[in-house]
Length: 477
Image 1 (tube, rainbow, N blue to C red):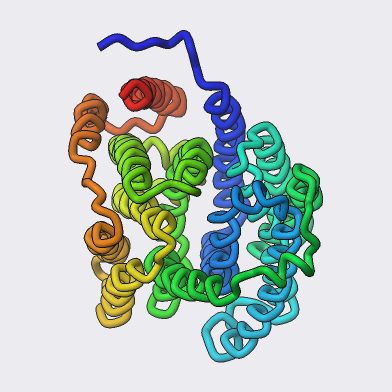
Image 2 (cartoon, helix red, strand yellow):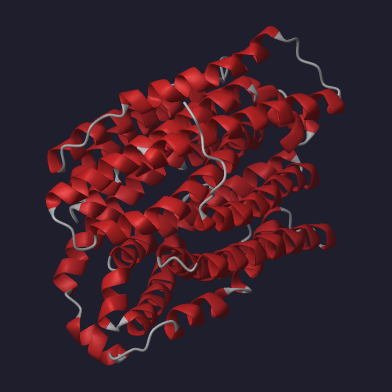
């Protein structure tokens, strides 16, 4: 096998540069968060994130996915500016509705015992509104404005962490203060990302004319199943923090959440990098393609991404103890087993997101409802009925097994819409490449910082080399 290292895709370099900076900022943020906040405040912070994810999934992401699916259609029709204004208007209305709906939930749940009403709702409102910037930034990337996308992403990431640290250091707001800083960082690029979408094409359609032409029946038919699926995704991916809070202490919430957050910070960065690079081309390829072409491109992206994700899963499993030493405060260094389980959860969560692209391709989201419902039911039932106080590792294990169940059922369901093929060959390539990293299992754990850095760097270099091998094979295939 010969590899040509002379030519590197320009888009890949741009996205990779921005993502590397974002990853570094995310890792610094995780270290500062676990150092600056005590264990119970860390638990409160992840409860806040779970609630924000719930609102985004139930109320906001469905209309955003509809907008993304037809971005190129809007651009070609000269209605992108009006569509973007309509999205901004829709999100603003939905944020106000969502915040209102949360009022009774706040008072009827355990949330009111952990947060002050006068801080909670303004911060939730601020964070949801700031998240609109992320919707616009994602659209900028899908339209392949790579430099603008990287610039916006780096600015809000760096600004958010700096402000979060400052607010938390200067006040006694704890988790609330950290979230305020992150939100203001996102707000700092809201105008610029919005304006980029408004001015990139000459609009021949007014906002009123655009709204008059919207197929609201088709929009609702698309958004409602997606919102239900996203709600079920939330139950599978985030609700465990609230369920744990109901049965165990905030310290337990913090321990499990930090392990999953470390895995998520690595996986999300990697997943974000790959989707930022591959999804624009994928959406462009399927926008006006027939079923045979859509199947070809969908099988291709499934094979590539699942192979890359499996490679990362192996790296996290074999380097879990060293990753914890580097990324979180010493009070969380004992979570190695939790991190390994969390890596398995992230593998199947991210892989399910790839399989879920079939529903986007076929503009049919109903088939994803049952798989996520089954996983959600299994998760809620297990964590609500059983008490794992004496064997706490069963808590993350239940979360992992529910994600595996979702993946299996979702794959079978999506095959009914489009006859996708499971990428056995791609996974075997990744398995062969990752196995040399298992040498860490033979090494005694040493906590000297220089040793940890050296071993982690060596493993990272090998991981990147393996990733490049897979990329070159996929590009030439």
